Image (cartoon, rainbow, N blue to C red; front, side, top):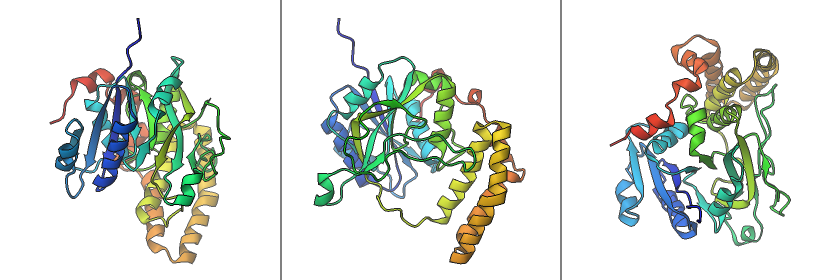
Amino acid sequence: MTQQTPLVSFITVNYNQTELTLELIESIYQYTNVPFEIIVVDNASKVSPKSKINRIYPDVRVIVSGVNRGFAGGNNLGVEISKGQFLFFINNDAVITQGSINAILSAFDQPTIGVVSPLICYYPTSAQEVEVDVIQYAGATNVNPFTGRNAIIGEKQLDQSQYYQSKPTFYAHGAAMMVKREVLERAGLMSEFYFLYYEELDWCERIRKAGYTILFAPTAKIYHKESISVGKTNPLKTYYLTRNRILFMAKNRSKLEYLVFTLFLFLLTIPKNSLMYCLKGEWQHLAAFWRAIKWNFRSNPERKAAWEADIDLLPTQEAILNKSYA
């Protein structure tokens, strides 16, 4: 008897980018030959994309959130109505390629594998770039105990098949990661405290602690339309990167490791960044940076809740499946 092919739930979050979302949906229909469903969560866009998406793709399920719940919150809404044995979280500015979904599913060849991320390349924007792909993600290193940062393996390298082996990695990439449904029962959902940045790293920490392996699968490739050039940051990005880096370390490292990180933060990171923002005259960035520091080291109810958040506070899969949204 042939084993039944599992249902894959594609979950993507839209925020004022309906055309990009439509291009992702088109690639899914074009290149997926296993049973699937598509769930689009709109994070309070100025104009709801529901009517436009469903006019072209009536089978796509569109959830319109009344508020912007961030990356984690938007994806969690999608999880709550999903039915697939495997959930593929994919950015709406990405597109899949021929055979990528089959390759990812094939990578789940051991019961301990809980998450698989494909090879992610920057989307080609010129005829020259079509000839050779530029890598955005080929796995990730562990978060440095001093800086609270990690590195993306292969970033901005030309894809010359140098990353040809599937291998365990510390973190999946939020732009494209497939998760077994059973993982949610043991590790819970993504924490919505982060809103932007570090949420998938925090989730991967809990998934690994629950006994699952996170795998990088190079035989599957997706293209991500994020710019290859590092654009100028904005104060919002400065705030969340700083705030969430500290929060991540507090939640996921031992007291001793967090103490070492805190010493590094106050003795080097804070003076260095403060001086840099002053010399550049980036006063809004400076204010955002210090607001993030104060959020973590001054007592406030939101920080306390985030600091003490535990897996058992998150809904179980049974609760997820029994809950519905209008």
